[in-house]
Length: 177
Image (cartoon, rainbow, N blue to C red):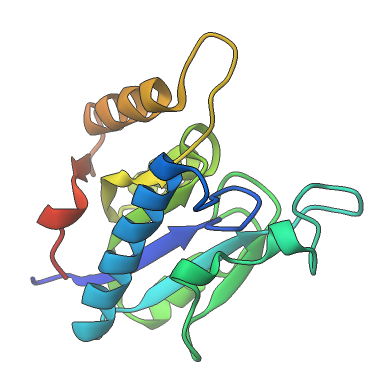
């Protein structure tokens, strides 16, 4: 590949992705496989970790805030705190990517309709080549929509964005580093 590629793991935290749910275990296993392939290719791996304020379900240093052990970072892999759905908003993510010469992002994590969607759109707007891993992002059911429906909708919608830097959507087994 001509562009340096990084794997971005967004909010794969215990309070958002729980392996006791079969569909979330599948997502975690896909992320785990991508992590192994990215590390083997010596591609940068960067984690985003939502940090809510006091009383927030993802308040720092609580069990739900911790990154799920199945996809935990290795020493030296940056874990960047964020407080908004946009992983670039008031975080050092862009500086981390620029310092590593990254122009292509492979995006995984939680939650589909919030942080994953917003980060994909922002990254494309900033000129990154973005690939959303179709089967490596997760969300929950809500009134009227199942998690599977939301994931399918966002996979389809993000793949159709009309930008100078379109977002591609591929299953985990088609991702290369």
